[in-house]
Image (cartoon, rainbow, N blue to C red; front, side):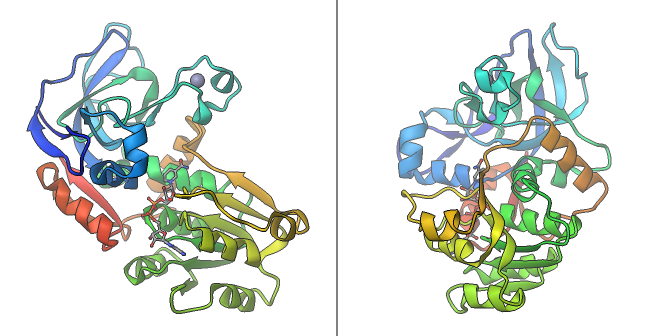
Amino acid sequence: MKAVVKTKRTKGMEFVEVPTPKMGPGDVIIKVRIASICGTDVHIYDWTRWAQHRFTPPRIIGHEFVGNVLKMGEEVTRVKVGDRVSAESHLTCGYCYQCANGYSEVCRNFKLLGVDHDGTFAEFLVLPEHVLWKNDEKIPDEWATIQEPFGNAVDTVLAEDISAKTVLILGAGPIGLFAAGIARACGASLIIISDPNNYRLAIGKKMGAHIVINPRKQDVTQIALEATKNNGVDVVLEFSGNNQALNQGLKVITPGGRISILGIYERRVNIDLNKEVIFKKIRIYGITGRKVFSTWYKTSRFLSSELVDPSPIITHQFSLKDYEKGMKLMKDGKCGKVILTV
Ligand code: NAD
Ligand code: ZN
């Protein structure tokens, strides 16, 4: 089969012929139809510091997809041939302390699809049955493939109630943009998005943001304070992974408010804990992965009901062999979500 493989410990990847993967008794072989590119894949392509420490070539990359069940191992009971599936990308162990206590998103032994296990940028994919998600028939393939990152946004937005709240979203990458749509669908009364990328701010408007801010040209704190009659925002959602943006968020969060942080920082962050957190009595939520499968149910319902229409965010589609075009667009920030047909 054809697949996108990280073959060497240097920048780049290769579109090559590889053996079709083999399955065990509890596994399923899936014919991938669409895969989508995540920032993680770009890090692996560029062979960033993170990738050098975390990734061991050779490996097929990618963890977002939609496809159909082609064949099952003899122990598989939940899915049948032809089922249209996506999957939780964290292949959890199911028995560690966290899994046992309902926090499998922080499983101690999880393997990441496309990093520790051959991924979705291939014609065929093997996965254990327990991570598969059967897609709602109302959700088109182009939306089904983005449910995994959409789920990150669901958990970031809904860490607490959001209805009628005022919200500042930092970072209008695909996940920040999903968050804007979700916050709007859940009845947030004011949604402000900040991002230095005007292309993405324009999508933010389409997703329901009331105010968009370019922090290179405008004063984020001043605009957010003016828009909230000097109260500050109830909720900050951090998707930028930028320390300066984080500090802007902490500064404009109203005392007693909350911040959910999904963004990942390149370096240790610097914040004024006394002034911005303790004496303001704010609540900070670290968000990682998705709740399995409660977040998937929410995601599926947001999309199947069209409470959130993610189409403005899905800006480009290429065939798998042209994956490098997508990687380039992502590096240049001239896209929302890029999907690849297999
Ligand atoms: P992305 O890189 O596409 O988006 C980040 C956005 O932040 C970009 O549009 C960028 O222009 C913007 N940005 C940069 N500096 C900014 C600033 N000073 N102020 C405002 N915006 C700024 O990423 P994404 O795929 O949308 O993911 C969002 C974040 O979540 C990333 O940091 C990613 O690493 C992280 N992430 C975490 C998890 C997890 O499980 N914790 C999962 C997926 C992604
Ligand atoms: Zn576990």
